[in-house]
Image 1: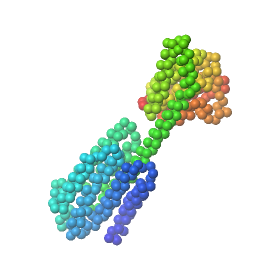
Image 2: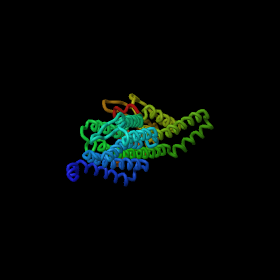
Image 3: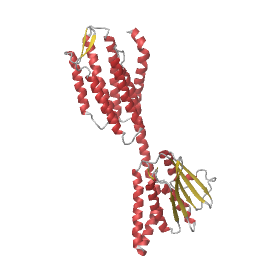
Image 4: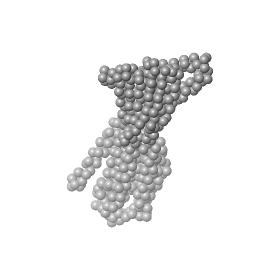
Length: 417
């Protein structure tokens, strides 16, 4: 036994240390949900026992007279492996109970328990191992569970197309490769490839759970950001002034008041819709929202003119990007002009979709203000979302009394949502 440990310790020790470190991490990790923690701990407990089962099975093959002990150890190994696969499935989709899979695991256990009084599954004679007609039921069940698990993962990530789906898929491939390697072994190894694969897959699923937490945390932050964006765009002064304009129009031009109220409702609805848009939206939709806002402002300030030169509109942008920039141009720039003008144009080159918002307003000194995107409402948010959601850029050029130009560049290849 001492010689055996000396020979196999270089392989066994790293596996045990990896499993022990993972167990400790799962126990102290505050970001893992209780059901997931419970599943992981049960998985690792089973893996610990499978390592012990492998070691006992390896030693018992040199004691042919201990047939009953070897049968017990072998039956446990064939019963425990499919259970780990179902627990992996529970990790990916915790809301499902997988009763059929657990029933099949129970049936598989009953089949191998027949080894105590029959040779229909497995048996031992004169120290040799024999596989009966149902001796491959564990392998057949494992293949079925792996296929179900793979379909489960593909369905879960079919719409979102997240790279994190690669971890469960790679885990399935590792288990398949390990199973094939074990079946090709001519001698009983002291530690099976499937057991080693179970340790590695447990680590991968732990990392996968952390990626899930990071994604959910990012989604929560994005939701909070969208709420802040919406609230920053629906300015109290704009609401009050628009309602006052509608109130005045009700007396002098009821039909125009009706049209203005309809546009105002459209504007509010589009702002609210932005809360449900975690992804990019077509530029055409953003332009429509901008036009509705501009038309409301032009009712209050007839001297303001908006000009559109749209050469390229077949791409996507984060919601509420162009409209806040036009709002800044009107609110902080052209209102002071007798003939204010805002130009919105788009173009494209080999690398970029280019959006330009140019006004003839009062402008400002970008040298005096080293961070001009923070001087007006919403621009900091716009810049951040353009950079994070579509790897784009936002550039501001301005001079006092000469107007401001904002240029957005969206990489080509972001044409679809």
